[in-house]
Amino acid sequence: MSGGSDSKKPDTNLDRAAQLLNEAEFSIALTGAGVSVESGIPPFRGPGGLWTKYGEPPLDGYERFISDPKRAWEELLKPTEDWLVGLRQTLGRAKPNVAHFSLAKLESLGAIGALITQNVDDLHRQAGQRELYEIHGNFKLLRCVGCSERFSFENFPIDVKSLPPKCPNCKELIKDDTVHFGEPIPSEILASCERVSERADCILVVGTSATVYPAAGFAVEIARRGGTLIEINPEPTELTELATIFLGGTASAILNDLSEKILRLHRPG
Image (cartoon, rainbow, N blue to C red; front, side, top):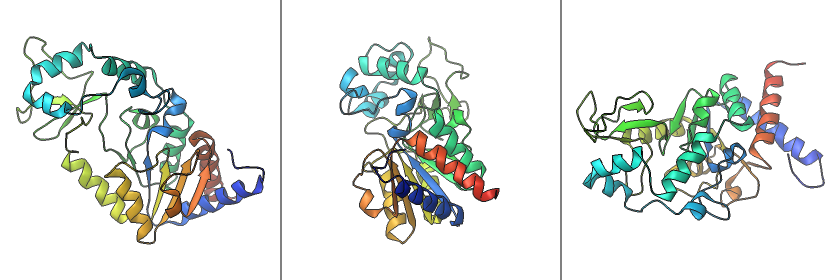
């Protein structure tokens, strides 16, 4: 964990963060791209970003899907656009890192009651997170645009001669679960995120500057109503001025130490 020349200051802040999480009535976590960097998934924008390297998805992606779902499915099954090829290859290689496993441990210890992620990489799920809300979807899942039922991409029967596939429950269109540009966030997942954030008196923000709404709104609202906001990022962000505690460094290093400190609070000595 980084924190400047005074090694005692980060430890003091880390101890305080552990105590606040442990004492909260109900804590949630909000994660973004920074959690998955150590899994080999670069952020989308900026130097070395996926979209910088491969190009950005179309800004009318959802409109394209709705207007020609058959063609959209053909591209999904045999991608030719660089951004989609690059994204699926990068996500397909990635494995959960220490940060993902530490967050799952915090949940098992009762220090986190739910986790909202902006990531679509499936890594929280693979690490064992149970109360998980993927606000932008999951690249390994499919979703019905009608009833919002989600299905495993790998196990869903797809007839390439009869595209697009239809929902076995309501017969509406099936699309990939990731939320496209121009696509509303599914109402069920948004309602779940709002429900847990309204209940929370503490939020742990990791690997995101929390500037993309509606996800950013959960952290801001909790802080503004007097809740605890603990931020973990390599550098301060626009959210830092609202933070109760800012812990500067990599997600893996800080979360590993944080989970160990909370474990010791549960098991004195």
